[in-house]
Image 1 (cartoon, helix red, strand yellow):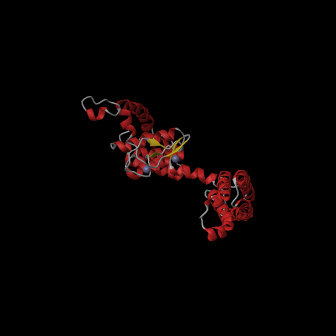
Image 2: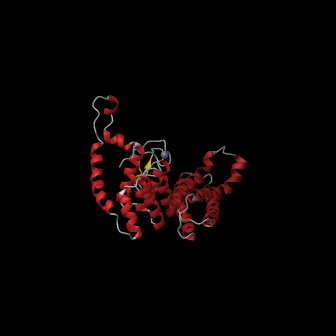
Image 3: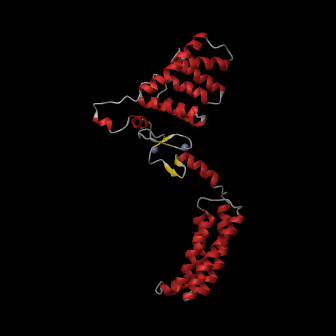
Length: 296
Ligand SMILES: [Zn+2]
Ligand SMILES: [Zn+2]
C-alpha cells in the first residue's frame, strides 16, 4: 500500500477488511466512496474489482488499477484470469514480494511519539480509528461503525440498538420489513376502530358520566378489555400487518369515538366539574394504552 493520504489509507484498510469478511456489498460501497475522493488509488480499483458481481465491471476496475499502476501484479493476475489468459510471468513473481510488503507496513504504524505531549493523551490505535469519517458527513471523523454493514458513522447518525450501533440505512431497511401495512390498511383498521369506539364511547358516556368510585374501578377494567378488543378485531381485519403510525391513528379513533358522546356535556357545562368526566377519562386512558400497545 503506497497511499499517501492517511484518510484514504484508513478507508482502504477498512474496505479491505470488510471485503475479507465477505461483506461484498458493504465493501463495494466503501471502495466507491474511497474512489470518489481518490480516483487515483489503484488498490481501491483492484478491491472494487474483487467485490463487484458484473464481469465487465470487474474487468474495467482491474484495467483502471493497471493503468494507474502498471506493475500491479495482483490486478494483472486477476485480469488475466478473468480473460482466461495465462498470468504474466512478471506478475507471478512480483506477487510474492507484494504479499510480504503488507504486514511490514502494519507493524510500522504504531510508532510511539515520545516528546509530543499532545499525542500521548490518545493511544496510537485510537488515532488510527479516528481517521474514519461518517459516510453521511465526510467532514466528521468518527470511531463508530454500523454493526450490520460496517460503514463508519458519526455519533449523531448512529442509532443505538440492543446489538450495537446501526446506520440509518440499515435501520430503515429493517423497518421496511417490519412495517408491512398496505395503504388500504390505514383505512380499514381505523374505520373498524372508529365504529367500535363509537359504540364503546356511547356506552361509557352513558354509564360512567358522573359516576362514583365504583364506576372508576369498572371503567379501569372495561377500558383494558375494550382497548384490547378493538386492537384485536382491527388487526385481524388487516391480516395482522403492522403500520408505523397505526397505533397512534387507532388511539385517535378511540378518542374521537368517545369524545363525540361527551361533546354535548362539555358544550353545556364546560369542564366546570371535571369530576364528571373522571369515569370516561379513566376509560380513555386505560383503553388507549391497551390499544396502543396491542397495535404496536
Ligand atoms: Zn449499516
Ligand atoms: Zn453523520
